[in-house]
Length: 175
Image 1 (cartoon, rainbow, N blue to C red):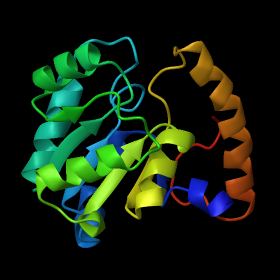
Image 2 (cartoon, rainbow, N blue to C red; image 1 turned 135 degrees about the vertical axis):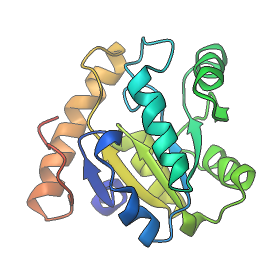
Image 3 (cartoon, one colour; image 1 turned 180 degrees about the vertical axis):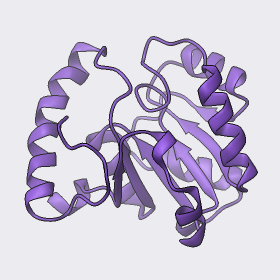
Image 4 (cartoon, rainbow, N blue to C red; image 1 turned 90 degrees about the vertical axis):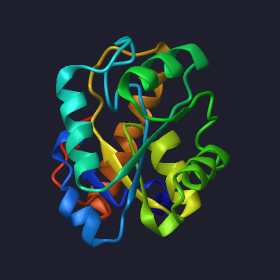
């Protein structure tokens, strides 16, 4: 069961992704979480640095799609400003929204990476579908109370993954 919670790779932030390595793996599309993956959960719009990152990602030939468990209003407003399609109320770790995003981007599961800051939603959901999963550290420590509780459990899981050699990448595992 622990393997289902292990990301394929762990980096500090989306800015630390090696896009050339992803491309060499055959990845053509990125499904990303929104809150605490791209911006803090209370940032309504993308910042200039994130917009620059998106230009670089697209320049390398990747499609990008947001899949979030947050509300339609929050996700729609952010996605429109960011210039990418999105699915809200995704009910991650369920696979349906991930599949739909792949279909809409016209890519296979083997050509897709899921990026997120949570093991029990983003990583587990992507792993259940069989796509390449990338865990990032949360952008901010400010988050919902329920998420804060889950972070404690994630910390235990991360330590176990690290001990068993299942946590690959330069990400800081001190969540």
